[in-house]
Length: 224
Image (cartoon, rainbow, N blue to C red):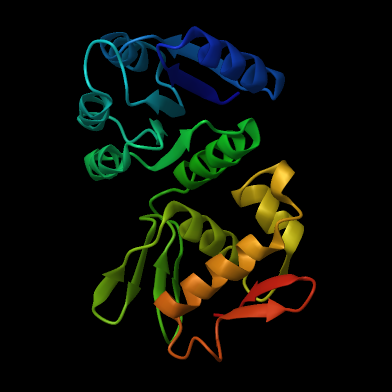
C-alpha cells in the first residue's frame, strides 16, 4: 500500500484528501505544520509527500530542504495561483511537481500516480537514445546535443509514457487519464498543445516529427 503524507493546516482539505485517497487504496498520514511533517516523515517513511507551501510555523520550502537532506521521496507542492515565484523556489529546493489551488481531486490523483511511478524506477532504469535526443528515465532528464532540455512536469509526464511504450500506439484517453486525470479524457486539445511543445523542444524538424508521431484520431506513438 502506497503511504502518502499530507501536510496542510486547512482541516477541510486534509479531510477531503484523506477520504479520497483512502477510498483509492492509499494509506494516509497527516501533519498540520512543517515541524510535525519532518518528524512524521522520519518516523513513517512515506512513499510520496503532498505539501502545502503556506504552513503556520516554517516555510514549505524549508520543509522541502529538510526532507531533501536525507530523502528522495517524491514531493508534490500545493500552492495558490499567486505564488508563482514560490513555486519556482519549491522546485529549485527539490519538489517534483506542483498543483495549484483550487485543484481537482482527479488532477491530484494523476500527479500522485505519476510521482509514485517515477520513483519506482531504479538506478538501472533505461536510457533511451534517439538521433535527436536522449531520455534518462531514471534521472528524469532529457538531453539534446550537449545540453539538458528543460521540460515542465506535464511535458515530462507525456514523454515518459510514450517512451515507455516504444513503437506502440498510446490512445488519447490513456494519455489524458494518466497525466491529467479521469475527468479530462475528452480534452484532446491539451494533447495537441503539449505535443507541439515537446516537438519544438526535441525534434530536429518539429513540422515533420521523426520520433513523436500523431496517429490521427487515435493517439500518439514514440519511435526511437
